[in-house]
Amino acid sequence: MGEILVGVSWLGVIVGAVASFLLGWLIYSPMLFGTKWAEGSHVKLGSASEMPVGAMVSNMIGLLLVSWFVGVTAVNSHLWTVILATIAFTVLAYSGATFSQKSSYARMVDAGFWIGAVVVMIIAQGIF
Image (cartoon, rainbow, N blue to C red; front, side, top):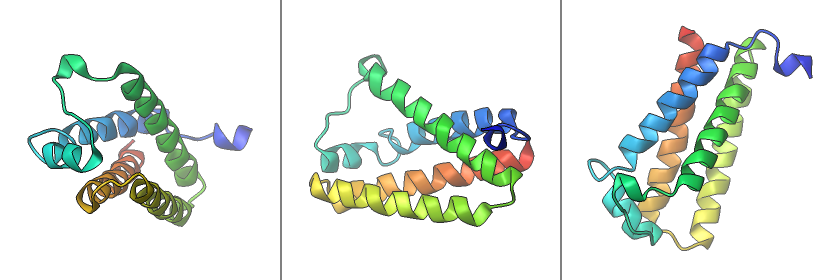
């Protein structure tokens, strides 16, 4: 268990997760791709006060876990591992979204978010 704790830049993990969360807020907002994404995802965009708290909390926990994974791979100089994992899980998420009949636009926005989020996390590890 020590190998996933020792040497990890926890500041990088937290900054990477928070920055990725903010990236998602921007990407999924009506300012960018949110309106057409919501239509293609069969969801209704609401106001900030109508945000589903459970979804937001689980998203933040997931981003923290992915950012931790990025931190562990950074310590062990295994950048290709995180790149491979990101591509694999993005393809799987794309596939799942196809089964749930999201539009190709919504699937591409989701895939773009995940790739962008991991890039942000890698940069955070590099800085911190």
